[in-house]
Length: 208
Image (cartoon, rainbow, N blue to C red; front, side, top):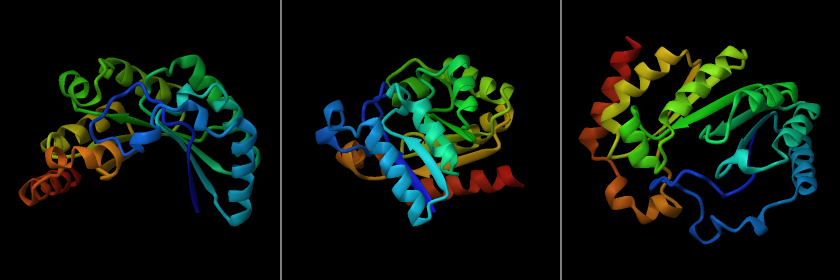
């Protein structure tokens, strides 16, 4: 039902919980071409996929992203952009909307400027906040993504409050996937049972 198209492993964010393969994370030569991706999208549609997520790495580094969004739209997909928002601006959001993009999901590495920089390696928190507001201003459904690990799971309540403040329609509290860098850094990332229980309680209390 869902095709996740990892267009590239290139990324401006340096997250210690990244699940991208270590051996090819920076090799752009191994990426599929525009024509190859268009072929993949068509094959997946024939197999019955109805939702399409453009991911990475950071899909915004692909100059053909708008073309691929338009192709996905023409094939009848519900299209999603999964991004760190680094490299995103109002003009690109408008171009993606014109190409038929249905949804944008922006990832945060922390609940504030300091923790976002610590876990992502970039001073991008304010820009992310600006882009969430711009997505809403341009009337595109907005989702936020927060990857949980030992170092930030205590911020679950803050994540949810931030999402509510920004007006997000959807929030993903994602578990770290222990592949690639995340596997390499597992001993520093894997939460304790007590931390998981506290994080779950914070989410339940927020819902109430």
